[in-house]
Image 1: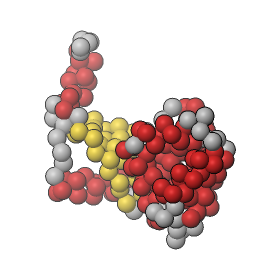
Image 2: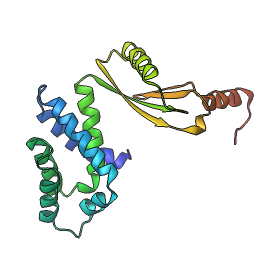
Image 3: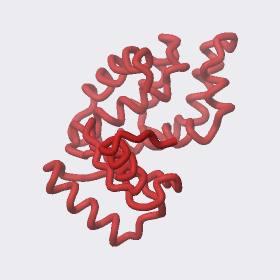
Length: 183
């Protein structure tokens, strides 16, 4: 997320998560994941919502008709407030930040994994088990991205900490050690 987007997203996301109770947080997380998925899948929706020429009422009606029966009332109200404040162009960043904050409150650690090939279920389970003991989190949510450039192995990002066991990472470390640059 860009620093400017984070600066704008943080207060909205923080306020929304503070409204949530411990009981409603799992539902809100599902709503945020649903919204994130839909925005990610539809560039047309993103363009429509961030278009300054389209009137706020049209955007609100769109949000109500598209998401009204699929998300909780409090989440819909959150979207409408963002619309009123004319921040829909930052909606993806706001949702992303709200998800991060809700995971933190729920003791769910978001872990980004880059792997050269897809992980098997047993590999994912073993990785989650190891990460739970390492982070002391109640739950681990893996976000796996396949990157064939890694050649083999994987890299893990937990917060600001990166664990790189990929062949590409090992080659980079070796090149640094030898004082050679890799192209």
